[in-house]
Image (cartoon, rainbow, N blue to C red; front, side, top):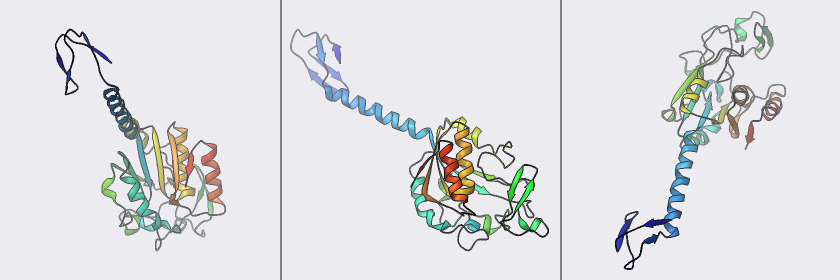
Length: 248
């Protein structure tokens, strides 16, 4: 970089630079340019972080050991999820939030048992044990999850007539949860998704995010699966088909 001068000395970037009499130009050392480039890189990194969000799916008591719909090892992911939350500027938690007697509960269908299938107006539906009932201990987040990091909590499945796996849409595939609008206002374009369970709510959230145009990755070490009749393999295949990056 060259700066025109008319005195024997000049302040450049807070440094007094001396020049010989009669000189008309001062060449700034490459170290100054390097510092400028480093600053620009840091600014770019900060901008990248602001465009990323961590989505933590349903780390709730009923999905952990001892819960009514326990995912094997569901509580094991909590320390890693807590650590990951310190690396993101925007963090969203989702929370299953069903009213008592929800239509996805087997107890709401006479003669049906948990994990059987029924036809709903919006398509096939797995019937689950009663779980994550609004206001219950089972619906609460795991006690060790550091929820204070959250910028937003999305409660889903509150409509008694429709289940909601995805953090973006209910299972009718058209009713939005409001998450997309929130992310778009913040300029978020890249999502990292973790939580419970890999083959249901994580899968549907990741696939919907990819369909909506986000860059999406799922970190399997911070997820656990139910794996009902091959549902884990189906989920991994589905996410790959839709361009979701799946890492350990």
